[in-house]
Image 1 (cartoon, rainbow, N blue to C red):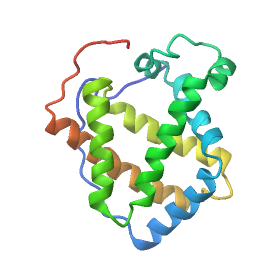
Image 2: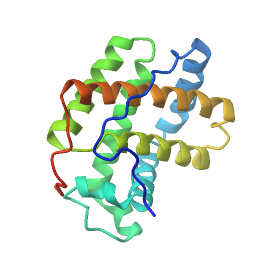
Image 3: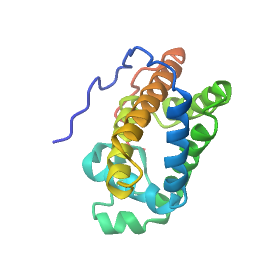
Image 4: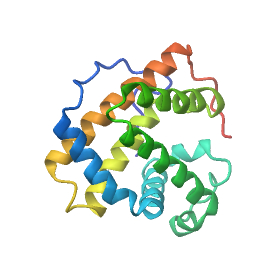
Length: 179
């Protein structure tokens, strides 16, 4: 059964300690291997998100009614969005040494998802967890426990930044919008 924690609320989390140089290198090296297969990895991540958390499809009018996993995988709209998601994460990974640039990227993403798409911030944590799960399976040679721990720390930081953007916007769950 799908479970949403803090649904409709912005979680208040303590910001994790900054990434070490070693953690940044591990993330960038592992991402380089993942990003070589950007389209397939992105589709696998979104399909897993939609299969494991079907309520996440409500934000996508183009494929919210597609139930069949194979049909989802073939959806051109899903492939396009998967590419955008992967490019967003790529921008973050590329800016690990430039916190201002990273925050700028996350502000754009946070504002769009809060104001235009009405996405609860909890979905960012869910997506990050799904990414870790998919990468651990698809890139097991790269995603060692140490690398996964670095990614977990990065994702906690990203989630804190995104939720801060939502808080700045005074975001409240507007409705059970389906589109």
